[in-house]
Structures are given as structure tokens and as C-alpha cells.
Length: 279
Ligand SMILES: [Zn+2]
Image (cartoon, rainbow, N blue to C red; front, top):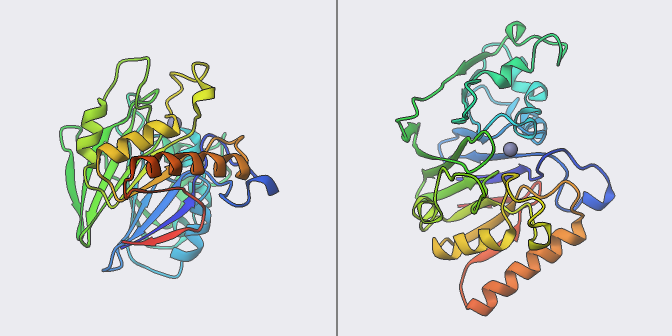
């Protein structure tokens, strides 16, 4: 499979030269399986550029949403394949506590967007999967999910395919002050031996306690999870919208120093738009 980051930012896009290295678009990751299957994780503003690639194909698109906060759905109205006649787009909503599985489509109604989703010529299918079901297949991939620790909750995903395992765990607060959906050791089990963990690392220790309860993790906590899970790689993800390239690079090097001291083989890096990894 090939995994590509199209949006790595949390909360709101960050345009400007000081955000150019890691990128300013909000959450979107693309996985193309060896058989050509397209799996898309989240529909933040990064999905716009992905759409320009996928428009050349006619095959089904499988979009897995974590939750409906704006930074995870706001690119959808600009995703070119939704305007492609007959294109099949299957959307799995996140397991949010608010029962609004169609929120991604509702943003394409009168008040929010000029084009109504009912006028689209693609074939959009919302597939809300029963919350009792925690694994299913998309062609050659097995998908697993777990509830996020985040205001309004949602889904984190593991994708296993082509002999590789990807854990996509964003907008997750590993140590929240509110009641946890998922405990740290359950996360370790979920992400165990992953080839890559993409984990929320929006905050620094200096952001706490002010941002405790906002639904994101401190970068060092993500490192702890990756080490405990014996993952091969950790992509620090969901960068704070105010964090400049220089500041993200400093967080990245700090985490790399921790790994070096632990003499572990884990590769840690800050996710950047356009970065592609073959697994
Ligand atoms: Zn969120």
C-alpha cells in the first residue's frame, strides 16, 4: 500500500509561509492498496488536492470519518469526485455521541454551501456501521475501529492490508480529565506492532493544564504509546493551527531525542503534506 498525507493540521487551516513546510490543510490521509482500492481517512481541507488525483479514476472511493468537527469534513464540498456522474463514494461516519451521521452532507444545504448534496451526480452512500461491529472488510483491507477520547467522541481506525498495519488515531486525548472511552493500554493493544501510528500530537507540555479536556494529546504521550505498542513509525499529527514550521521541527527533534535515549528503533517524524510512504 501507499499512504500519503494530504492534510495534517488540526482545528482550522493555517495558510502562510511560516506553515509551508508541514502544510496548512486540515485532516486527510489517503491509502491506496496494491489492488488500487482507495481508502480516505477524514475529509478536512486536504481532501481537495486528493480529489484532483482521484478524478482521473472511476473506481469506488471509501471514506472513513473519525468525527464531524469542521476540520474533518470541511473539504468535502470541494472534493472533485462528488461532482463526477456515477462515481461511487462510500462514507463511514464516526461513532459520535451526537446522532448526526449525515453531518458531512448536511453542510451542503442552504445555509452553509451553495450546492445542495441532493443535486450531486455521484452516488454517495452513507454506511453507518452498527456500533457493536468493530471490524469489517473493504476489498482486501480489514478495518478495525475504537472509540476516541474526544468531546463528542468518534472513531479511530486500524487498516490492515498488503501485509501492513496502519493505526489512524487523531483527535484523541490519551489522558483526558473526563470519562475515557478507551484506556491507554487498550490503545496499546489496538496499535500493537503497527507499521505506522498516526497519532494526535497537537499539544506541548507547556499547553497544559490550559488545554486539558480539549480532546488532543501532548506529543510525548504519543511517543509513549508508539514505544509501548512496538510500532515501527510514529507520525506526529494534527499539528496546532498556530504552530509554525520551526516550532513543529523543535517538537519533532525533541521526540527523536527521547527515542535515541531509549535506544529504540522507532522512527518518529512530524507528518507533512505530500509525504508518501510505501508500506
Ligand atoms: Zn475534533
